[in-house]
Image (cartoon, rainbow, N blue to C red; front, top):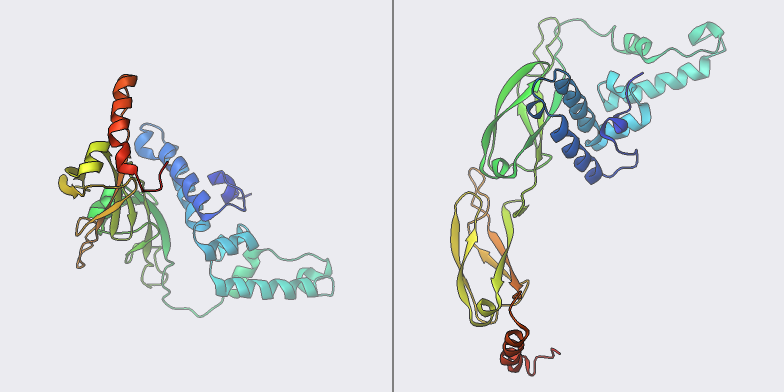
Length: 301
């Protein structure tokens, strides 16, 4: 019996797309061959996880899997074949017990018989191999700036280029790296679905980046020039205006992600005004008394 794909990822059948992504990231990191050196079963576990993710993250494939179970894989998650299967099965069920399929004993042939009947007898000649998918997790930085990477498929290690600005869920095509063709037909293609990791400081919206930067109360009150981190380009200076508010957003043009052939996105900086800690009670009271007049008429208690 084939293993349930939801169970492979440790999620329920009603899991959301985000649930599936989180579960895959967690388990992929745990079972990746690179973090399990010397464990020959790690690669097999990782391939099983990747295979389950490829199906459940794709709405069309997931719908067919929910309907047909393991049989969906046998028909290549092909919607046309799925419809032929449904029609064939309805005819088989209608004729069972009436001298039709199964010889009148009420049985219904399995999918292997269907595949032979529907697809095995079609015209001869060269046939193109099937397209296949693989999942590749890349770091936030590599997805933003571009990188070289490799993916393992059926024991083959294939090199590919991650273009700058690639987004999570995007697929990269490696022509001719799918299953071999038949009778001289061309091989199918390999589609590598990208899964982008998270960053401890930056978040991303397409080409734009966002980061939160702490500033002191004096810097917020009278203004200041602060240093802001960028992704891979060191720190840049940003002028904070006098009276800056907590949560205020500022933009640094062109400091976001720059996909090849496109203008760079922007970096949005959120200011976080940090209150001082420590010091004696008298010092805090004097500081509070000094700035209290600045709040007059502002509707702040």
